Image (cartoon, rainbow, N blue to C red):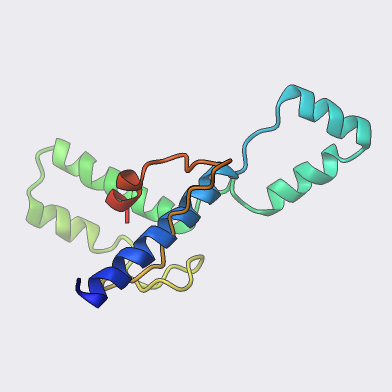
Length: 137
């Protein structure tokens, strides 16, 4: 077996495992029972403040710009504007070609390499099959 292929496969399996583990522990809204318990312990407000400090409820400026460009393009296409004129109209719109300010570590061009680990434990199974993870890398 080709050593490079084996290493790539091993890395893929490893990275997918980490992704699977993190999807299982994502920030989910607390149940009414958990809210009542946190309030009784006096921790509810502190936990809410921490969750809000993560900024997961905020839309990324880069995603907003990207959505705005897509909407503008669709609007112009629906009006029958030619691709040439659409490109001309959109040339003044900001693009996301520069390095996003809130994303660090993965290059904006090329094929970035990631480490992916897939691990199933006897007591905790991965929430997604490996094939789903592979398709999304």
